[in-house]
Image (cartoon, rainbow, N blue to C red; front, side, top):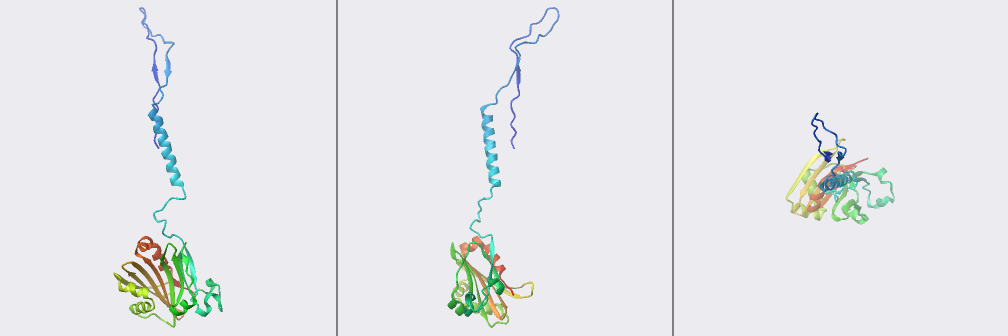
Length: 246
């Protein structure tokens, strides 16, 4: 905070003392007065500028609507409960319509993303169970597929190749990829997950695969390169949020 110094008052005399011939003395002048010199105009200008800048800084610092350079990136999520129900039980018909109670897997979805309703035909042919996408760029999305009849995971390269057989877009991404990496992790219950990262020419993909309840679950997170570069942290978050439950 700037400190304003005001000019001090000065004393001026309107008359001079007259010396005496017998005893030198100084007679106080009756016209002596304290004259306050007003501060120059520039002082008032500086003070106004300082106060205006301080008020502006206070408004910016206390505002709850600060602009963010990552305004387009998701920062909040909600949990999706997936049932991996058969096509015959799709939508709750013939089964439990309470997804949370009958969920077989969960994953996080960024706020603002939209759900694409999966048809019974699609569910019955390629095993797609759920899908969400960014309405600003529909190719930035996450989805889950499942296949019944799998008790355990095959070797990592075999699993990825089998997934590509039923997904033409995944085949093309792998074929043109700059790099394909894989690793294995275990959750707190010792369940094994295979994780793949595919860095393609124009797109990026994260895949997590596991087996449970005699099913193979595959969770995909896909994004074009510009969206990947912008939302990488959020996309990795939703990739890591996938797990089976129940």
